[in-house]
Image 1 (spheres, rainbow, N blue to C red):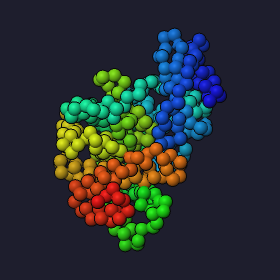
Image 2 (cartoon, rainbow, N blue to C red):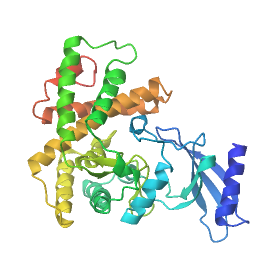
Image 3 (cartoon, rainbow, N blue to C red):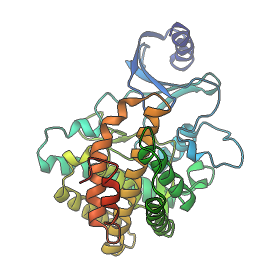
Image 4 (cartoon, rainbow, N blue to C red):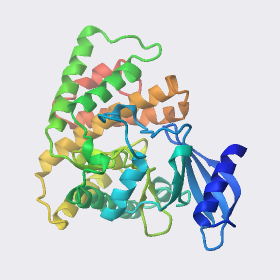
Length: 357
């Protein structure tokens, strides 16, 4: 830790002046990647009282999701910085970048506090929950519509897409770790064929949809609330092209959001999103077609989440995300029941998951 603090302090002096120094270094809860985060207290005339330090273990250019390493050659720039530059220019609210030493695995960021959208709506009445998620949707529309209109292929997000290959990779991840991992054992051939057919159908449908810029992990824990008005977007380095429903499904269907995003709230927010498309001057899609792709996106993402969280426990030794698997499975059951042609998967999955009736 002392070596890391020395490196941070040297960089702080470069960014905020020779007299600037680090007064404290507090580890913060990490995410599901290899990155680590710290809050550094600063004594820097004219500078902020604290900053967030992103650190990674080597001098490489990490992409947090292994399945997104689809470039013809290694990235020439840190994905976070590349996407940050684009989003900031497009008008998306993102944290300020004060400085970076990529060769040392250091990035100095604006401290947005500890309150994310999920924290902000805890205990709030339904009307307030709706207002805050509407703010998140407002920012999402800036990212998706404003960002897509400002397309620049120097931003690596426009050089990778959610396509059939990636959808099927994530479904396979679910089968390997969610369904067959640990002591669960392999699926019978007939059941595997049923799942593969259904997942092929979902992947094919989503692959055929128009794509816009997506954050890829636009959920309530990646939206910070530094004051009583703003929603600021973080953890955007995996941005890519995908159907617009993907990020919306991520926002309204993630981990345990069902506790506050009830079915009635969800319907209000989907309608608000569609109204927002019109206000941006875009052609509003047919609501039934939009809803089908929305539900398929929510299901695909939740299947991925179950597989991913089991993988993090079994392979990476990170069991903390296991607590979100049960509510995710219950949401999968609910959304399968709402999606024509997929309800037959419920009894098959119920044989493996007690959370599914």
